[in-house]
Image (cartoon, rainbow, N blue to C red):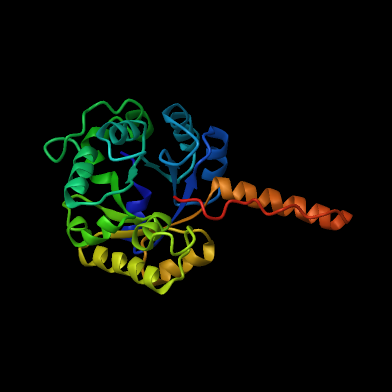
Length: 272
């Protein structure tokens, strides 16, 4: 049996630093897994990858202590179960808007009698141990994304869903959902009304005895979120890290040789 490192950190009262993988490449996943993240999430919703890329990425991460998670494309029992069977120890499900949707999500995560998950952990038994079926229900983590106006309206009911381990805030979509096009899209919200909404989700989650997680666009904002009490924060994804580091290297070289600095095309406002 392999214990879930996220659950261990939470039991010790420690926050989790989560990395984000949007590039469908096993070598990128392997590199990221060796950088000290507590967990890594492979993004099947907005990431440039499908299931055929997810499988070798999970294998490449196996040598690291980082807990593997997957954000599935949508609320689909088949997608949730396939990701778990591939070895994910946590699932982030986007666009959860009601208690009923949260209940369906949780039921897809766990075997009968606690849920509807079908038995067939093809890779999970090799990645996590032959006794996987005995302990999977207690170790896998179900995180429902709160990122819409409906999700906020139904927040008090969603967080009380039995078996739900936590909620995960998508600040870009949440801002669109609550304010429309009033503000630019992006992660690290500073607008008072958005900070209030984020902190309300945090408070309601903790009142219900579950965890609160936040997608961040910088280490500074992640540290701020932890100071507010968030249990898991996601740092920059592999796309932005690669683009930012590449541009910084080119700009430094051009500055040293007296050439023009390139335009800043680093993605800053992608929605995750």
